[in-house]
Length: 324
Length: 277
Image 1 (cartoon, chains in turn orange, purple):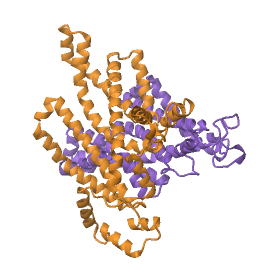
Image 2 (cartoon, chains in turn orange, cyan):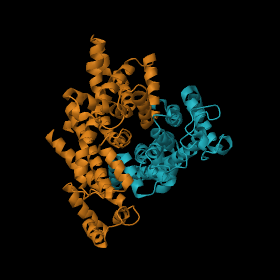
Image 3 (cartoon, one colour):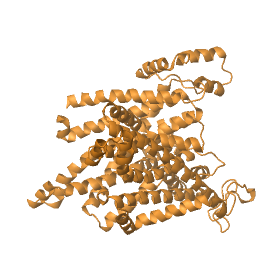
Image 4 (tube, chains in turn orange, brown):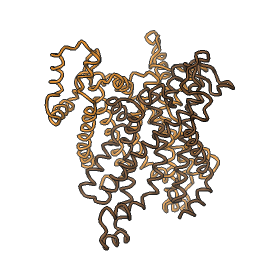
């Protein structure tokens, strides 16, 4: 188990180096130097200050050396200072916004699992029934709905017509005056729509996947055996079949992490949630290069961590993997 | 094969429906100048933010422009982005997949590692970052979506090459002296056409979704050019007073994407019923 874990960690190293290479070279797609943009944003910048910046980024050196310098800093989580007026270190800006993004993503991932798996299992055990047909159609529509549009519709419905839920930010204006319970409810009511919508994106895919896994497993010989020896249908489905059908789902969950993190840009922008996605959107609009590169790298590393957790989960759940 | 293909395809009513909708949408897009009731960009200050009426069935926006006309013109943007982006990603995917699958060895390891890297960077982050460094605009959007969505096709084509390259007909082609290029393009690649076609049809749907999201965020197709995404941006800005600005463009996206998905799945099931989910 430990050996498997170490092996997976080592395998991640070339991928991480590749990710930093990709994010580094994207910045060099830009016409001109990154400092030109800084000068554009802040015309008062003196030539000396500019030169200092060029030195800092090593722009006077060959590109490979620049990458080396940048990589050395990235290892220490030093992505340089933001171009924005507050000039704060990129990592500090990311750090304070990371928790809310992770919380929303984890909550929606849990929601996806709780909803999609029962739907997948039950539509597989009732294949071709009316219920199965309805969920199949729902899945198709679910795949095709732009989630940001669904967000707008739900905002109109719950935020404006029914006026049940707030549609912007994570706290009400009078948050500080609320009781402890009131604070919790205030936060929760702000998060309901974003979490629901973030989860929606993954629902269709996972329930479909669970259904086809279940269908495959149900047809295998050991299920027939379990039935033949007189086990109740419930035990056969939930104890024998579902456990095996769940295994590949762990991998799929790991693979869905980049989509979730990418989706946070859209939801955090729509709902004005001060998370990493919104920060990324703002940095793109401001062309804040150090911040863009920092978030790109952190986003990719989060994805890798998600994949690693999925692999470990898989190894824990399936002894065959560990011994390989 | 084509005969049984049609028979199976026709039996799948949803897929046929998807196909019909796709044909209609393409026709609308081509004939947009002749069928739209208004010029999509003509501003009319007397009819600002009007709810749907008989003269403006989908209402008007904050500049008094007719939403129905803008949606029909927007379909041109969506379809062209979809087709060009998928053209780019399919081209890259087929070439890389063929090379890795056919030659194997270290080439395979490097390219597949690159695929893994691309897949582990959140696609939407990658898209935004690249667009931040280029100028937003329709041609850049097409290119960038194409350049960030070739990984699936690569894997697909590679898998097909791995399963076919040691089969008898490939070996006999090699035995009679056919070169690598001839074997790749004439003997092996035709086997991969079906799955590639399916992934291309599904890819158009994906590209349309991504384009609309980018335009919605204001970093895709720029106004005044109408795109479904940027009409929705105006919808969001007027969310408390003008529901029609949010509802209709989204429906257009939903119907289009649904149609391509149904068509793609239908083609897949008709080619190989075993792949049916």
